[in-house]
Length: 505
Image 1 (spheres, rainbow, N blue to C red):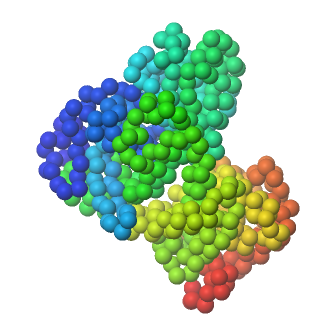
Image 2: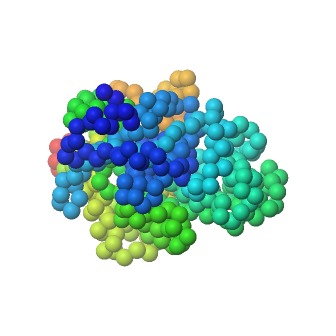
Image 3: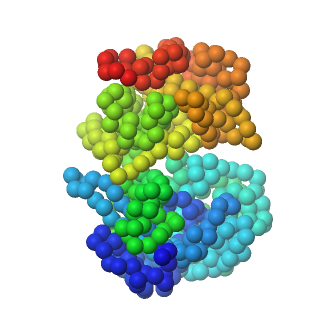
């Protein structure tokens, strides 16, 4: 039987399985969420569901999907889905299965735009959450009279303008808006774009005044490894244990963090923060942001091309390998930790780094390296270039582990084919698709030059990095040397020689 409201009472109660009470389905809609992805379902929606079950927040979510992706599974399952939490916390193995009832309905921006705008008339709706990928918060010439506007900021502005009209610009009708896109100062950036769009659309100054004074855009940071639905075999095993099928079943690690910049007023609106210590509302989230962005995401980004080209498909395989694990630890603890562009106590960095490695090695989570390579170039720019520049503020010699990671990135982006607008590289004779906005540039570079030339052209491209990385003392030569060695001897041999490991590879 398939998960839905109708079969909740038929599901046998089992240890480790948490089911929602019928009363949860009657809670009012309090949140408008842009995005249907697994990160939202396993983190913000997880916290809201947990709070609802404790009688704290008492509100459900209207989800807006902006793509043409199929949402029928949400309809068939009445918005229900299972979060399977797996991992080790404080040396204790955690295995929890939670049926989440936080989603009230899923609406399509393309076909249900008027119904979305109707949500602006709901006085209990006070919160907006988003995760529209890292390229979703961008300024474009958007007309908010379109049905719908093309961009996420345009859609948000149209919703807020509708709310302003519905409540005559009352102070109490303002919203708390919390983007979770992994960009620096995501709330501040979204606010500036929405304000600029309001001016470009010639909206009334009274609305702009209301927008600025009675709506709160919060910078936030999310941190949880969420691989999503497991493979067919593992899904079948899980569903047999659960006693039902679930098209939206979502795997997640135990660790969870949603750090939000806000004051007492934000805490009052986001009352679900009381349900789990993983929600942290504080006046400054820079510490959380830098630790996560650099030590977790930065390490992932430097490693993903190297690990994938070495033959590893999931993070655990590489991080538990006797050769690769040495490289990854040296990269994180010796170079990345020292180059974080924010003053953090050394012990705090060390503790966080150790916890990151425990998470990387989670025996229950199959986190694909390929999923980490999506938008590889923009991730490298945002997460790692600031650390590279900080390294050179402190040193005049190249960071060899970062240089190796950069060489692995360029080699991963050695694209050999272009079909139907998609670009492909090759690993051991097998094609892999590269999903990156800069794929066309890399394809063109590799078509016309050798490895050394490609490295020089890429590193000196200021449009990619907002700086000339080839001008950093010794960095270009280090990247070229590693890239050449990888292409001649293989990635693992190159890494082993760097670490002076004689283990056969």
